[in-house]
Amino acid sequence: MNEYDTHTIQSELVAGGHELAAHPADADLLLLNTCAVRGKPVEKVVSVLGDLRKQRSEGRDVTVGLMGCLAQLEEGREVAQKFGVDLLVGPGAITDLLEALEEYGSLRSGERGGMIERLGFGPELHDYQPPPPRGLSGFLTIMRGCNHHCTYCIVPDTRGPEVSRAPESVLREAAAMRAAGVAEVTLLGQNVNSYGMGQPGMPSFPELLRAVADLGFERVKFTTSHPMNFTSELIDVIATHPNVCNYIHLPMQSGSDRVLRRMAREYRIERYLAIVREIREKVAEVVISTDVIVGFPGETEEDFQATLAAAETAAFEQAYMFMYSARPGTPSYKHFTDMPREVKVERLQRLIEAQKARSLAANEALVGKTLRVLVKDLGRDSRYAVGHSDQNHTVLVPAESVSSMGVKDVTITGATPHALYGEAVGAAPHGIELVMAS
Image 1 (cartoon, helix red, strand yellow):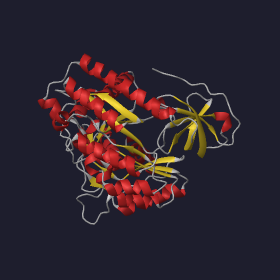
Image 2: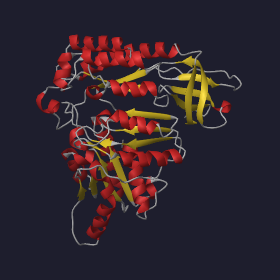
Image 3: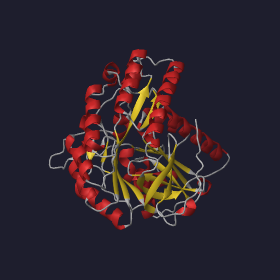
Image 4: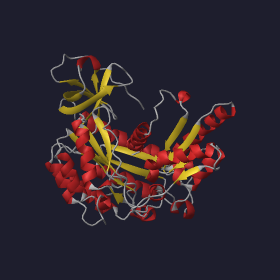
C-alpha cells in the first residue's frame, strides 16, 4: 500500500511542477512515507531523521516531510517535533501535499510559523488517478482503513475506518493500467474483501474482482484478506477465473481460541480451518500463505502448541511469522503485559523451523512440473532472471535462457524452502546451483 501511495505522491508532485531527484543528496524536498505496524520501521525512520538533522545542522537546506502511518500517530508527532520535520501528512491526506507545500512556502516567507499538518480522513477515498506504473506489475488501492479492532493493531488509528473507492474509479484506473501493458495487477486494502460493505449501492468484493479480471489482465491478485469476510462467493470467483491467481493470503495470527479472543479476532480456529478446507476443495493447485504472531501477551505453551497444530492442519505453503511487537496506543499495549523476549524468540524459531520443513516439502513436490511464471527482472545475482508463479512462488531462471520479460512456461528443476529454480520451456538446459540459506 505504501508503494502505491508513494507512486501517487510522486505523480502529484510531478504534476505540480516538481522534478524527481536521482539521489536523496540532490533533493530540496525529502519525504519519508512510513509504516508503523511494528516497532522496527519506526526505528528506521528515527535513524534517517537523525541523519537528516545532522546534515541540516551542517548547512544543508532541505525541506523534510514525514508521511504515512507514523505521521498519523502521536508517536509520529513527537518524532517529527524532535527532529524538526517541516511537513506532517497522514495517509488520508496524501493528495493534499501540494497544498501543504504551498502553505509551507508561505511559512518560509515569514507569514506564519510551525510545522504544517495534514492529518484528516475524508468521508470518501480520493479519486486521484496516478499514471500507470512502468513495468509488468502494478498495485491498485481499492479501499482504505479497517473496521476490525484487533487489540494488537494500530491500523484503525493510522488508516481510519473502512472507505471503499467508487467502482468506476477502480475500473477506470485498472483499464488504463491494462492499456499501458501491465500484465499483473494487485488490488490493495487493509481488509480488501470487505470492499463495499456498509456503503449502499456498492458492489461486493467478489463482484469487483470479477470485473477487474474481465479486463484481460494476465494475472489479478489481492491482499490482504480478513477471515471474517472471506466468503464462498469469493472462493468461487477465484476458482472459476483462470487469471485470478490461485494464491491466497489469509492471516491466521494464532491457532489458540483463547489467544484469538485476547486479540479480538472475531473468528475461532475451527472456522478459520473450515475456510481453508473450502479453498483447497474448490481452487485447484492453490497456495495459501498466512501471518502468525508468536508470543502475544499471555500466550502459554499450550496456546503455542495449538498454533503449531493449526499450521500443520492448514498445511500453509508460505508464512510470514513475527514476534509480538507492542505498539503504543493499542489495547494490548495498554492492558496486557508483554512476554519475555527470550520466550518469544524461542517459540518463533520453533515455528519457523516447522514452516521451513512444510515449505520445502511443498516446493520439492513441484520439481518436474511446469508452471506459468511472470518473469519481471534480473535478480541481485545477475545469473538469474526472477519471477513469480501464479501461486506466488519465487522462481529463478538462468538469465541467458530468457530473451524477454513476461509470462513464461517454466519447468521446475530444483527447490529450497523459499524459492524454486527452473528452465524456461524451449530453452537450452543449464546447470542449476542451489543457494541454500538457514
